[in-house]
Image 1 (cartoon, helix red, strand yellow):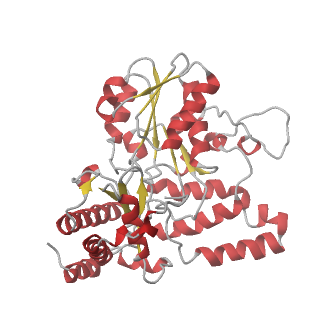
Image 2 (cartoon, helix red, strand yellow):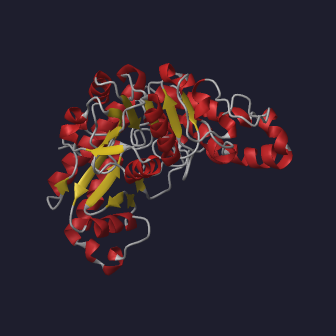
Image 3 (cartoon, one colour):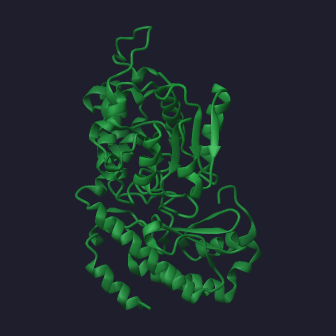
Length: 408
């Protein structure tokens, strides 16, 4: 078992160690929740202040041109593209993940006329399931085929228009084989769409290498764009000319400032836009993404796996009260670890009170996320040391830790 000194040595050898200085990490906090909300990058506050004071406050509406606000969706999308294995002209940043899910799923059905089935899995992130349910209820002639992971390949047949899965499961961290499942979908003539919300910025995703057709993801987890940051969407180049969005807003028009009455879709991925860009949110996300400049995503993934393995080894050795709610093999796991305990909520609140921030997912999962750009090996060692103390002293039994907050 590694010692704390061993972890310090690993940090000294870490090729990503210098990235930590790019983030404004609070003193006395070990942050293991970057899979839910990323840490504030140091360059974001001054960039936002300039946008508010100078671009909005001084230059006002001129900034659509002088500060190039109008092209923020494309610029931010182009920064995200290499992190997910896409071309710059296949990604735009816009709207929320939920809205983008609706747009792309509805567009996928149009691309496969005569097919009525969307395949997904139970326990998927709720918004994915809710959006599909809403789309089914709106259109009427759509069937959701909700299948356990082991049966996904067998569920893909000639009736399927779309396979929609989350690449990394939000609760267990289970990692789907994107290439294999996409290939299986294509073999029956279906499209494959991936939710990258728990992948982008933590894994070496390769959408084009896997042949993916469509994808969405959020900007506020591993991409560190801030709470409620704009999301992104990917439309593979070969689909762009035929893709029809159900939300044909003015920013997706071929000539938005010509103000024509009839809608004509913009060329390429721009037709995935809808309303006016969220300038301040996109500005913050654009600045945050600078932390990935020059980063080798292979190194990010290798460190992610090592951090997760270290946490599991230490936690199961020192805290036998927990079950493991994720894969022991890091090859089948995203950048997070799930421990299970019937008092998981209270234990997590006790940990947070001690400065170790993870989160809880009902009914019994304690989630711990590992963001390689700013998390150290010694942080993992210290976090488990505190966890062991919380369990050994039973601090979590304090009644205040059992009071359930609105956000868990």
